[in-house]
Structure formats: structure tokens, C-alpha cells
Image (cartoon, rainbow over all chains, first blue to last red; front, side, top):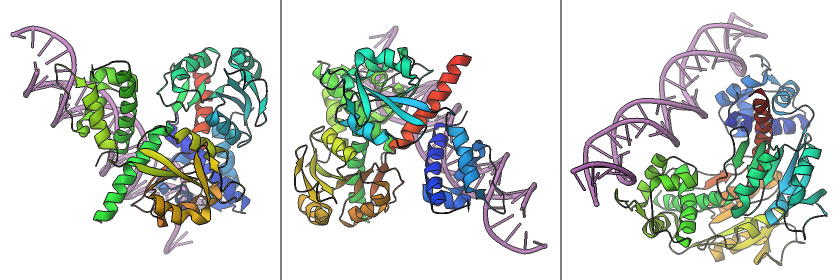
Length: 211
Length: 211
DNA sequence: TAGATTGTTAATCGATTAACAATC
DNA sequence: TAGATTGTTAATCGATTAACAATC
């Protein structure tokens, strides 16, 4: 079982690696990757131990083989499908943002309960009414959901998603949503993050004056 | 010095408390708040120790006084101003999302380098050209910036923001941006979060089959 | 009072980093 | 070889939780 943090960093290493390969790199050292990812070299080496490809003390890590190893660890071979639930301002932006960002993770559907928003294509993705949730998720074999509904509806919609067979939820509603143990759920609380920044900005400014 | 995590949870407690007060609650216990916030009661008690208001073993915490205490800890008395940098799909959505969400944290300006997007009002906020960044930040006394520019531009724009006197940055570009020690920077890597959910959704599904 | 809840300390837990023998 | 880098373990660090005397 690989930790959440390690998986997160692997996704970052992959992106960095893709850039390096595009620029012609054929090998790299742990400390180079560490610098670019903003972590320690020991962290990088520790993380890379899980991908099943070993570097060599002489040549470091071969870029292509390392990328292959990370892909083998992170990706579902046949690809995965996802959906966005709620196509208000944030939902539409996330739809656009996530569409085509990574091959192997396809945006297959969008849903909303407002009939004014359904029955049309938004950012290349068909928007269905919530009544069709179960049918479409089943037919399209969707496993991952991006939840962008208002806070009051979040828990209820999450429960419905779980009943429909979704096994991963990325929740943007500013309430901590609960789900069964067999469903992976990550909460991104934008308001919390903004308020944290506002608090520490104040603090940083004060520190700056004192220093 | 209060930890990042504690500050984050205090913002959550405040929101929950606001809801409870609206519903008529005048007092609450640590375990009630813990349940609603999805944390342990010990965690809540520990967090609340920093706000300078003590509960009593008999009556728990008085809702209004606790809210007052949290406000006193988190909020800058005169309020704070923020800006969004980059008004593409994501930037515009964040502009709409953060506008008016909390009194005391005002969206004062938006910026973009594309002249087609500047000189107009988006979601109630004037959009300036990047050339006006320094002047407007100074005039409006903006301290917090939400960074929603493409990855390639992120570090460069962040550096510019710091030079203009910004002391808190919420970065949405999918690269880890670096800033000086006197600037608080939080990275929200949406792609990383999505890929993590996709990975563990696969895992969760496998666990479900095995179980 | 008796009992529930508080503030607070000690124990636990998990993740990160430092260190080092093995290796090319 | 000599030296840099690897995989991996031990030490460190920080945050969370369990426990409990104090309290209303």
C-alpha cells in the first residue's frame, strides 16, 4: 500500500519528467528531480523505490524507463473515465481544466439538476440531468467523480454517487463529506485555503516588519 | 505561532458555528463540533485553546463567544484585499467563487496579460492589464493574490507579485512555485489531486472486490 | 454531590530526513 | 581505482490522540 503523499509526488515527478524528456534529457539524478519538485533528494529516492525500476549509482535514472515505471504504477491500463457533478461556474471551469489534461483519464459526462443546463454540450462534454446519473455512470463505466455542487447538497449527492458505484470522489464543496471506507474521497476546500493564505499573509507581513 | 493545520480547521469551525448559530444554537460541546468537522474531540479542544476564549466543563462553549474568539484570531481588523491573476476559465471561476464569500476578504482587482480580457468588469471586479499590477496593488493595498496563470508563467508572475509587496499567494498553477520566506505560499495542484483520486479509486475498487 | 466536560500533558503514530554500506 | 549516487535503515521531527486531574 503506497501512501497518499507518495502517489501525489509521483504524479508531480511524472509531469517534470515529461518536460525533461521533451527537452531531450535521457537521464537524471535524484537531487535534480528533488530540486525541480521542491522536495529532498532522500524523499525522491524513497518515493521511486515503489515504481519497480531501479537507478544505477553510475548513471542515475534513465528518464524513459523511469517514466515507464511511474506510468505502470499510477495508470489503469485501459484508462479511466470521470464525470463532473454540478456545472455552475466552478464545475464548468473544472470541466474545461480537466478535459484532455491527461490521456488515460477521460471526461465522459457532466451532470446537473437544473434542466436549463442539461441536454447540451459544455466544453466538449455532454451534460445530463441528475435523473440519468445511475444509467450513464453504469453505461459509461465511470469510476471517478468531481463534486462541484453547493455545500447543502454535497453529502446527499456523494451518497448517491457511491450507490451508483463511483469509487473515487474529488469534493470541492466547502463541507467535509463522508463516504464508506471502500470509496476514496479527497476534499479540496478552496475557502479554507484562501483564508489560510489571508491569515499567514498578515503574519508574514508582521514578521517582515519585525525582521 | 499557530500551525497551518490549526488555522485551517479554525476556518472550518467558524463556518460550522455560523450555521449552528443561524439555527439557534447558543452553546456546544467539543464532541459535537468534532463530529461536524470530521475530527477528534481532543483535536477540537486543542485547536480552541489558541483563540483566547475558554469553555466551561458545565456548559461547554458559548456559540457566540467562541465565534467571536475565532474571528479575533483569524481576521485582520480592517479587512484584507485580494486579487486574481489570470482570468482564463479557472481564474474567472475563482473570481466568482471567492467574491463576497466572506466579509473582510474583498476581491479588489483581477489581472491578465491578454488585452482582450482587460479593461472590463468580470463578476463585479475590474480586470486590469498586467502592466498595471504594481500601481493597482499599491493603490488598493492588496496583500493576497490568487495565481491562476499557465504553469510556464507561474514562477515569473509570483516573483513579480512578491516584488509588488504581496505577502500571501494561493497558487493554482500545476508547478511548485517558490517564494521568499516572508511570503506565505500555498500550492493547490488540482491535477495532482485528481490523479490521486483516480489512483486510489482503482485501489478502492480492487479492495472492494477482494473484500 | 456526581458526572460530564474542560484544558493540558504524555504517549503514540506516521512521515521526513540524515546517514551509510553497497555499487557502478 | 576514486568518487558520486544509489537503496535502505535509523534517527528525527511534528502532529494527533489518549488519558487524566481540575472544574463547574
